[in-house]
Amino acid sequence: MPADARPARDVRSAAIPLGRNRNPLRGKQPPRPPRDRPWRRIADRARKAWDRPLTAYYVILGSSALITVLGLVMVYSASMIQALQLNLPASYFFGKQFVAAVLGSILLLVAMRMPVKLHRAFAYPMLAGSVFLMVLVQVPGIGHAVNGNQNWIYLGGPFQLQPSEFGKLALVLWGADLLARKQDKRLLTQWKHMLVPLVPVTFILLGLIMLGGDMGTAIILAAILFGLLWLAGAPTRLFAGVLSVALVLGFILIRTSPNRMSRLACIGATDPGPGDQCWQAVHGIYALASGGFFGSGLGASVEKWGQLPEPHTDFIFAITGEELGLAGTLSVLALFAALGYAGIRVAGRTEDPFVRYAAGGVTTWITAQAVVNIGAVLGLLPIAGVPLPLFSYGGSALLPTMFAVGLLIAFAREEPGARAALAMRSSAFGKKRAAVRWNTMRRRAKARPSGER
Image (cartoon, rainbow, N blue to C red; front, side, top):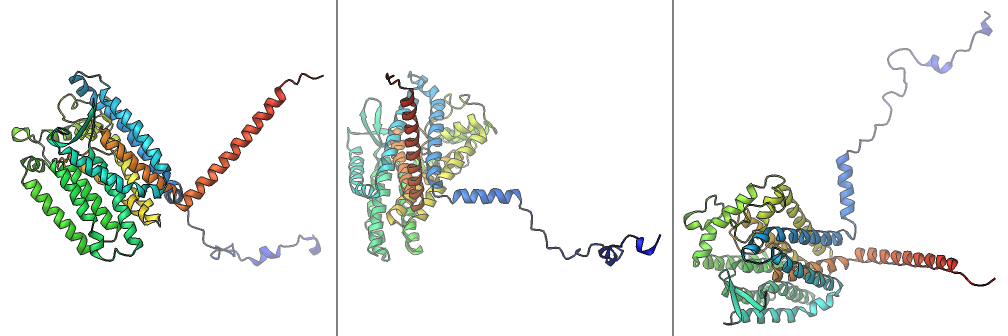
C-alpha cells in the first residue's frame, strides 16, 4: 500500500502516552458536591415549615382542639362506671363536659376576635370579680366543700363554679397589663415597681385559695407569678428572694397539714401503705403499667371499676395510659409540648409587651398545670388535685382555659407576617368566591328560557 494511502493517524491519540494515566484530566477534575442526606432535607423542610408566619397559629389551634376532643372521649370512657354507680346515666359526666366544651369554644372564638385593647380593658374587672367570688366561697351557706376543699359555689341543679380557676386567667391578664404599663414608663428597672402591687395582689389570691385548702391551685398561681417575673427580667436576687419566701410558706403549709404530709410521703410509692393512704397513687401506677404499648382498648379499663379514685378528673391520664397505652400517653404529651412551644414562640416574636407577658403567662399556666398533674400520676410529684388542662372533667377549669387558648390564637394572628398571610388568603378566597358566583350566574342565565321567537 502506498504511504500516502495509509489512514491518517489521530494526532490526539498519538499524543497520549500509553500507560495507567490515559485520561489527561484525571486528578484534575473538580470535587463532587457532598450528597444531601435525607435527614438533612427533612430537617430543613421542618425548619422552613416552622418559620412560616402561620405555623404558631395552626399549631395552637390544632393541638388544643385535639386535646379537647381526645379529652371528651376519655371523659366518657373513664366516667361511665362511676356514673352508673351513682344511679345516673352512663353519659352524665360526658354530657356536662360536652356542654362546657361548646361554651368554651364560644369563649375561644370570642377571645380570638377581641382586639388587644379590649383584653386589657377586661383585666381589672375580671380580677375584681374573681376576688369577690373567692370571698363568697368562704361565706357560710354560699360556699361548698368538695373532697375537703371549700372552693365551690353551687349555681343550682348539677352546675357549680370554682372561682379560683377564673383567678388564674384574671392574674394573667391583670399582671400582663400592669407590667406592660410599667415597662412603657421604664419603671421595671426598680425592684419596688416590679414587685408592687403584683406580688401583694398575688398573695391575696393565694390566701383566699388557701383558706379553702386548695394547695394545687395555689401552686399554679405561684407558677404564673414566677413566669411573669421571669418575663419582666427580674434580677436573680429578686427572683430568688420571692421564690424562697414561697418555698418557706409552702413548707409551713405542708408541715402543718397531716393530709398534705401523707401526699408528700406517697411520692414513688409502690404499696398502698398503712391505712391505704397511698391507694390512689399506687393504683394510678397500676393503671399505667397494665396498659402496655397500645393499651387494653378504649373502654376496657379495669381500674375505673372502683379501684382508682377520681378516674375522670385528676387521674384521667392514668386511664388514658391503661386504655390507649404508651402510644396514647406519648401523644398527649406531644400535643402539650407543641402547644407550649408555640406559646413560647408567640411570646418571643412579638414587640407588644402586653402580648409577651400575657402569652408567657398563659403558656406557663397550662404547661405548669400539665406537669403537676402528670407528675402526680407518674408518682414523681405529690398529688395536688389539679386537673389536666383541656383534658380532665370539669367545666370550671375548661372554660377559662379555652378562653386563654383563644388569647394565644389571637396573639398569633396579630404577628405582622401572620396578619399579612391571613389578609392574602382572605382576598384570594374572596376572589375565588366571586368567580364561582359569576360562573354560576352565567350558567343560570344560559339555561333560562327567554320565551321569545
